[in-house]
Image (cartoon, rainbow, N blue to C red; front, side):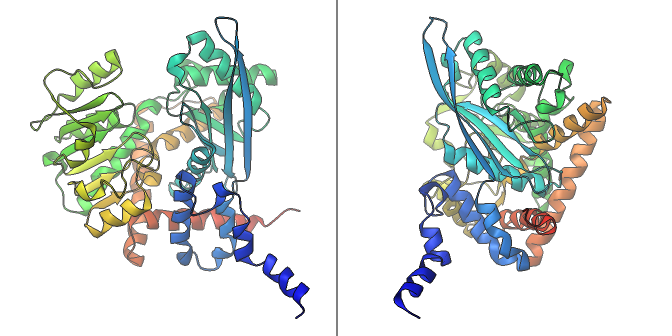
Length: 441
């Protein structure tokens, strides 16, 4: 082989191609996307012949970055950066939330879209993965500014979303009202009402009963199954929750109703604890009024870092990603960690928890209740026939229990963690769909 041929072959080798990737696609790049890539690498040896398609999982199908200019109330013009990433659509239209947060990055949105692909496949709903966001602190905007920003963002991403293409939903700092504005904006641009373009809408606009509580209910459902797996009596358990909104708050309430003691809660405002158990309904009312657990009467106040050392049996991280790291994983006293948030545990922390015999129920199965009921909402919108809340909750519990049982079986068969087992189940489903569909053109 001459020098020119050798150089050409080296330039097209897998190592050379990987080296040429942009930094945000590099597995060694710090950030949520890097964490996701490490998770895919860990599962690749279990994919068999489907591993030939594994790079499909390492590259988003479509990434859209948009400028979102709006008129502020004072007459000036402000610009915000928005994203919509469609990670994979082999199994169906993209599905994933939209978050408004001052720390939103492309790496984060890419990772969240990928975890949505895994999550949807793990519970076997016919969706791919997508995610969106705007880098903004919505607390600094008036309601009028928030509406104008939401509508402009929806118009900017309107060319790639739609009931059969990509269906947004609420996420951090977004809610039913945001979804109503998004649905209306898309519908006005299309010239026809399209309720199915988003989920998590108000009931009067085609929303589903049970959607607001669905993610927290799913966390509780798989948490009970996981507790049984390790011989833990939930009615005697002590629970610590990070994040006390729709996910952590609902999960905490359901565990308390099952007899557990919620002994510590942390959110963006501070950390409160009570060994005898916090009064969860009263705490939820306090959060609804004040926006934080801080200042809750009848509870001790802890430094935020001390939260990770609170004696408990079940820990529910239900805030943001990368909360459990190699710096605090060794201090966690729980026997069971149920990930209500997306990506709250780094791979290094995962290894520490596994070595310590702490069972981790990963986000991609634990918090899939929200997207499951979003699927129910989407189906109801298409049929214009709506189910009762009891029907929805029963269907949700059945799907979550069946999905968790399948993951546990794979974990036992391969002697791997629940996270790796969930990725095995999901990645095989995604890549089998890719293999069946082939490449076009």
